[in-house]
Image (cartoon, rainbow over all chains, first blue to last red; front, side, top):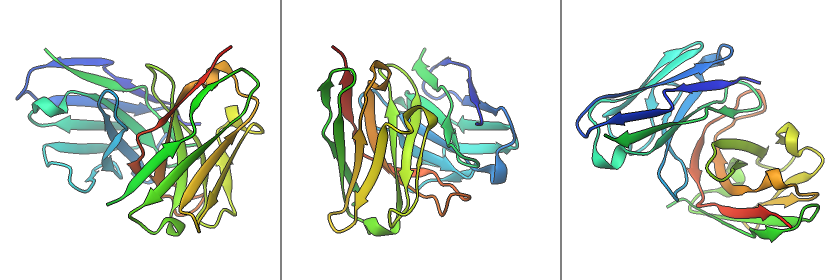
Length: 108
Length: 123
């Protein structure tokens, strides 16, 4: 199975700053089948990005995804107060689908 | 509006059984794969199982094979997870999610999630 490693574990930033989250796969993710989810405390995950770079319905354009092969990035261009949360990457290029361990974006 | 509502969680002793349900609405349930994903307290996400639109294909993570069974009733717009021989490590919030897989060789992301139901396995 493909292991996804997210870094950093925690990112401490201020509103308005740029956030860059990394997701590295143990082997190449086929067809860039990589998604990103946001999860707030007590809530279900919310799909942000699929296909490595396509925004899901209703997701603001301050969220962007990039990458291919084994290295992927989620960028939040300017952090809004509602963006402080935990972010997970997921690969669905091979079975079983797997998730990274998450990056917590916290208020500095 | 797409809605997924899980139920059936609770406290169960090790070795016990529990059946989770997920009621779907706001979309054509029979047209989508569906998945169960779990999250242990304070931990990350783990895919558990998924099922094809007509129930003819089912897949599981290795740690639950032989113990959990996923099923669906398209007439009732419902997804189920029968969990037997439960272990402490199965303690988690269980989410049902709409799965955008096309087939086993063309998996998909999860675009809608329920709010989850907590399963606690403890004596």
